[in-house]
Length: 184
Image 1: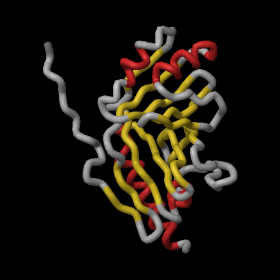
Image 2: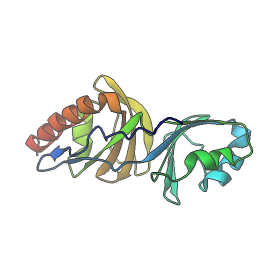
Image 3: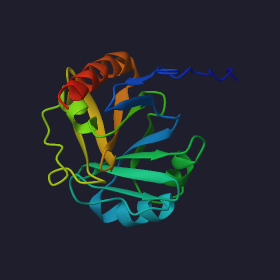
Image 4: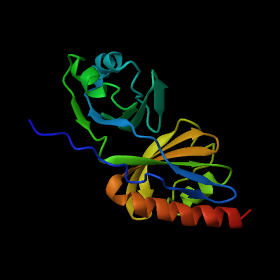
């Protein structure tokens, strides 16, 4: 049996921001890229312990897990490290596709009164509270990379990005944070 490789977090020790924006690496998390037919959403929801959202741009959190709607049959599920997401999905008894993307992704937490402006430095999406309320999520573009964006509070976001693009995303967010502070 091969020894398990322990991976370091790509943004370990990274933090930054400005007077109006705080940037920090999110703690490690377990992540599933999940696909299931609409008629099997209920069974998989029960197994995961949260109701998978079925409306565009929505998320649901329960039992230390968050499910983000990415498409009609696609979700990103985020949970605590070693939280058993893969096993829970396997126990659902329903056909689905679940891929553990825990080591592919990392996340940057962006908070403060200038958070939306910092993200808008590289993302064209309307992040006003009316258009993108707390709990809203979407797969979008940030500079030259694809991200999954979740609004966690009025002035806080979680930016999920592939670890290979995390330095770039953090750097662009840092520039956006400086610009957001200068605009105040």
